[in-house]
Image (tube, rainbow, N blue to C red; front, side, top):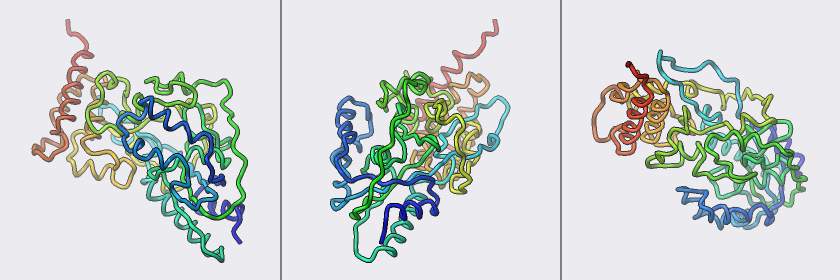
Length: 357
């Protein structure tokens, strides 16, 4: 007979560091999503509007759900020395979660293994449905009610022992499992994440205006990045970890040796060298990671913006050499969005160049 304890124990053997069980009920925190959407904080993420009803209750995801198993995996790893280095170049920042393998695929496979084991242990039939970020589930709410961690002021789930560099995923099930006590908010009076956000995206405790967030600006926007916000992304080419890096609960972050999350030279690579790669070479650079969820044109837009923010006037001519001079209509460097970012970057570098007079 399956128990919550046995499921949590098995989850730990499959590569998760924490696991808990929440009730499949209309939890109060779920009701904030419509208000958040109404404020316009989702920006261009239309899919959130379309899935708002489904996200309002786990039973819209799995009608027979009686419990929600939530698992967390640490993705913070030892960071190797920066990748490609060129004199006068600027190194890009890539959010920690995107430095290893694509977590959507890895976590889904591990959850499927957990479900398979559950079916071996349980005599009768039962329903399950897994969720990994892209599915219509408010993972953070169920994580809090499963005791995995509380939702911090930066909107990330924080675990008392593990910090916040956690992937969240889970399984909705019709099994009547014993639930865990909810995690208790431990943020106190601290506002470091709010105060440290360079774009002011955390507009209030637990409230994120995604349209100001560097992760949104570098990943979610398909078209041109708003000009007024380009300077704010600094050297971030994909996502941002600032609000987690300053969190006191991450002062001594727990590291994982899980090979799935092993860091690659993506973080710290040279923006100038990457800019000059062909589309095929850029594809190889992001292959197998969560960075594949960003188009190559979006990546080039970000690289051009990072170069423009570098203050390195010597990099201006590099922007005229995308893809080692490849010129064809299909090349990602020759889209209007990328060309607009290049024009902006060149002007910014010219303004930042020291005067010779």
